[in-house]
Image (cartoon, rainbow, N blue to C red; front, side, top):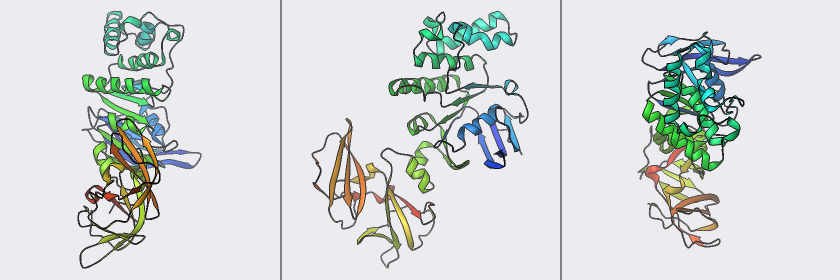
Length: 363
């Protein structure tokens, strides 16, 4: 049953190529005004899913609704969506003004209304001074703003973005990311955004759908996904540097369960277990910022480790070290005095750690 409360609703969606199932029985509801980011590695199915919503991808089964209307078999132009692609796909012989207005002119909208919409989009995207230029006279960031504007002039409720910033350099990506965030706040439209860039996902999204092998691994707020990843894949995919993973086992004792690794015992009394701990193989996950260099978080006796690499990052510093036969990283604010070969006594903030069972699920 399609939800009437959702801006976009997907029910039991199945997509297959030549007998190979890419997405199988996926259901997803996107709330009105929500900014949903679909994040995952190449080949995970995120662009395929977006194209299915847009009507550019055939589906084998399931239903898709937009604004409460079943559009499963509607043509893309009839779905009430605006779409921005990775490539700008601008008409090189047309001015910015004509690129923005072309789709409206072919649908027969009145000239005065077209001029109003183009002026509004140009103002929102800071394109007023560029309306009479051709795409060849624009920078990459300006071209992508024109591509976004071409979608905006349609004045629809739902916008779809397929990796719109991936062709830009780092500085332009940062600038346009802020522009898109501001645009969503001003317009309040529903936006679904596909990317493989975790920074874009974390900064733009109200919720993130982490995808792998055509399935959603976790659907939650950026805060929840970063601090309480549901499995090892999500934990390792989000974060830079990646979460530290320590292989060991959970051991039961009269004083409470502890995590054992190469002779070290880490008390788990402060760990927020999802369900009662089961003794056996497990993986302890720790973000670099949840490890102290002086044992402050330890709560257990720790042996010294040895610094192997120091990476100054400006505002903070990443220190890589060897401890209990494990290679780990910690994040410290500002510049530090560590150098390769120095001794280090790491301490772990277990209350903010993640524990994963042998099957990779969060404990």
